[in-house]
Length: 295
Image 1 (cartoon, rainbow, N blue to C red):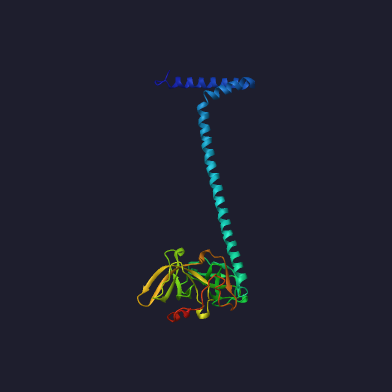
Image 2 (image 1 turned 45 degrees about the horizontal axis):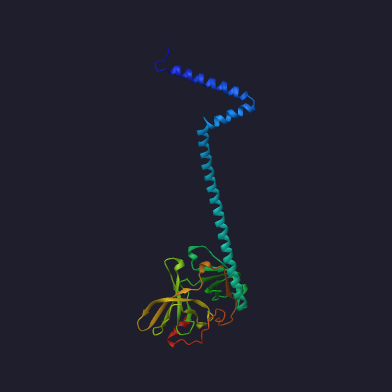
């Protein structure tokens, strides 16, 4: 007896169709290859064509995805290589500069490596791989080929701790390269470390210092040698009416980019103006800048 919905009849038809396909497949499987090839080709271009097209699209998309992944990986690897080479190139440049500076100021100064502590509490400080055994002393100036970086504060036998010019306690007696104005250079903290500047303070009110003027150490106080480049004036910071002016300075040395420096290992030349291409005349600063000797 048939089901009301014809389910049994449908099942028999499906079974018969499946059996016929199976018999046809067995027959085709038994045919010689020269007869199978045209049949396969005909099936591919008719019944199987939509399925093959869909498969081709899936494979193409998978290939594109793999290509993008490979390209991204190659790009990242290339960027890493370029970054490493750029860092190495910069270190080589600094090392060559330090060695060139060493030829001009040795044996008073020794080339050393900068060691970063990497702690927030150590901000504005750094270590160098030379100490008392090498002649480094408390107060040793730390220089680069671009100018002044800082000074040594603590000395061990083989290492020393130094502060750079961004440290709140850093001070150096300074003057303009033409000797017309002088004062004390001290740090000015910016919103970001890259925006830190220096300031030439306590300069005489009647003297105008133009932007672009080079500022160098004056040598007063006998702590830092005279003529070491500090930076370039970029504008006035403030004026105390009738008495003093302060000027902002773009530093010649960025501490975060330094890896090789020169450190004083014994008392030596008091004037390095020729080394840093400063042709400042003899100290012609006005007497009212005598307070600059307190560095």
